[in-house]
Length: 139
Image 1 (tube, helix red, strand yellow):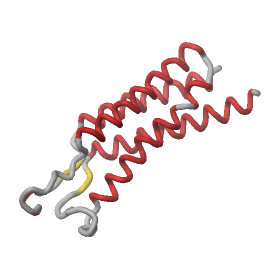
Image 2 (cartoon, helix red, strand yellow):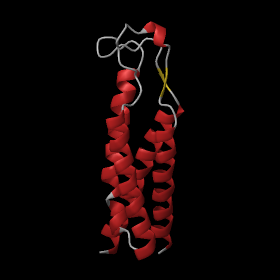
Image 3 (tube, helix red, strand yellow):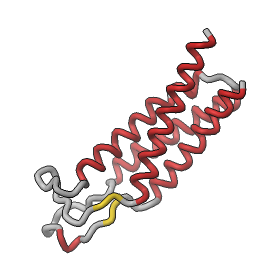
């Protein structure tokens, strides 16, 4: 009983923290280093919407876990966490310096928003896996 409440609260806090991460800038860069017409190395609207949808899904599952006092809904936050972490890992790889073959990344360094989103995705994966393990133990 206490385990699923703790996991539910962890999932809720991670989903809300990820929403905060979406509102923060995700890249620090010097636009003078980019060729004219190059896209900004920040998360574009589509990726932000995908992360927001996954975080809203995870938040709903965490709240459902807290209301029903069962771990099963929270186990599905693993999928939302993998989506968010995957998007952010791809973004971090593309924006790392010395990857000019993949994308123009001169002067780019990930900002706090990218790290907050990545941590929230990893926390959602961990809480989902812990909830899935708790469900397996109880059956």
